[in-house]
Length: 111
Length: 114
Image 1 (tube, each protein chain N blue to C red):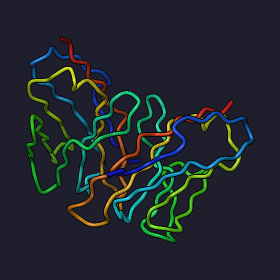
Image 2 (image 1 turned 120 degrees about the vertical axis):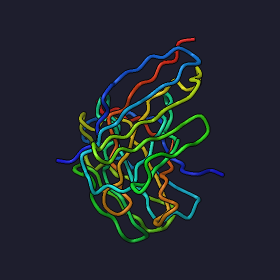
Image 3 (image 1 turned 60 degrees about the vertical axis):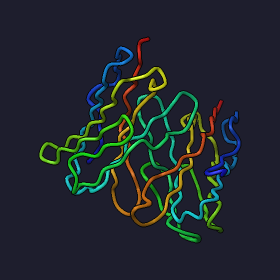
Image 4 (image 1 turned 135 degrees about the horizontal axis):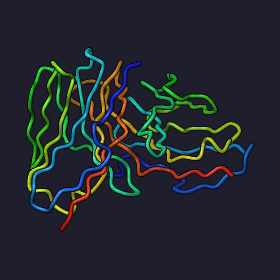
C-alpha cells in the first residue's frame, strides 16, 4: 500500500548548525504535505506546508523542499536551537481532507 | 482560544470496560478526526467526520465508534477495551477547503488498558 516514511528515525545536531529531516512518500497523486513538530507529552504542532505545484517554501528558520520526481520531502531548520528538539512528522494528504503520517524523526539538539 | 480540547488526559481501563474520549473544537471546523499514536508507528487514523451527522472509517477503526451530532463535538467510544488499545489518542480538526487544510491537534489522551 501507499505510505509515508522517514529515512532516519533519529538525528542529533550541534546547536547553531542546520538540520535536515527527510521524508519519502509513495503516492504520486498527493498534492499537499505538512510538517509537524511534536514535543514530549504534547500534540503535534503545524510547522510548514507545501503544495505539489511548489518546489520550495520558506518560513521562519524553516524551509520545506519537495522533489516530485523522486517523491521526496525535506525539512530544513536553520541555526538549530535546543527548543527545536522534538519529533518531526511529515504528513501526506490523501483523499478528502485526511492525512497519513510518517513514523517520525527524533531530533536532538546538542548544546 | 481553546482550539481542540480533549478529555480525559489520562485513563486506565480494565479489559472489557467501555469508555468515551471527548473532543471539542471551537473553531467551527467541518472536519474532525481521531488518531492513535503508538511507539514506532506514527499517527494512524481511526475515524473521521466531514461534518455534523457524517462519519467514516480510517485506517484502524475496529473496536471504536464515533458520532458527530454537532459541529463542535466528536466523541470516540471504546466499546470493549482491549490491551491492544493502549495508546495515545489525538483528536484533530480542520477546515474543509484550502487554504485551511492545516490540522489542529488536541493535547492527547493517554489510555492504558490492563
